[in-house]
Image (tube, rainbow, N blue to C red; front, side):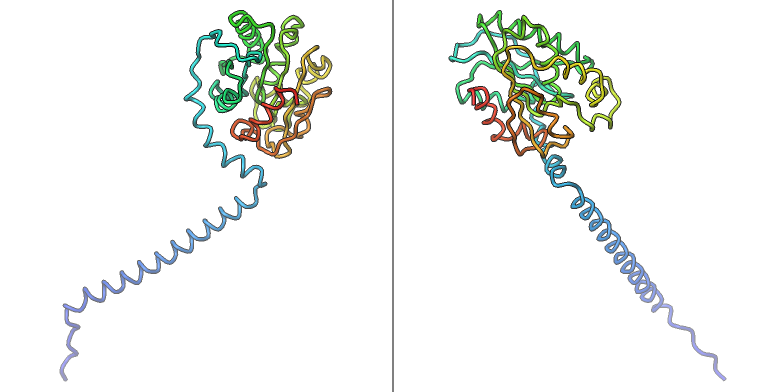
Length: 272
């Protein structure tokens, strides 16, 4: 009997290619299912985050403009515009550039003399308050004006209150507008353990000291706050006793980015 003939060798490469193709298709399907599952998981996690937090995270990249306006500029008298000079104070981890859009908006509405102070990341709050006091005195001296107005963001509001503990300096400030300042402390400060965040905890000695001292004597204080602020918790702690309260709808960094916030500041400085 004849033995069965062997499979022609020329058919083996074709069969091997088919097997490789099946494996690759299986791997591809597995990768697609895995990628889809991960994508759905990420989407579900994103949707599970509080809408105010999502809105805040989406706004953070817009702050990339800040370094462009962070360079220190000499204090010059400028042309009188019928208003007190305006001193702008940034918040924790910020720069002079943070308040540049607000300064430009106010300039378009008549407040052309604004001066943005800057602090070193290494300075604690007392050092920042001393630097702010010196800066305000320099603005007063150079411009020859009897008073300035001040606008602050976040931690800058507490820095201003510390600086204005000096009654003589407080007498040279007309209106202080604070944007999302944690006057009563904030529970989010417990997520960081640095010199300048520990003092922002509601039970810190600084917060108790500010509560005992009250607002700077003779200074009109306007506190802008928002229920959507994810850094000042509870949000109402952004309004100290005795201040005029202006409720906004933006996030913590939205104060710096929103024309609605800029207009609220303009109206506050104008007296209502």
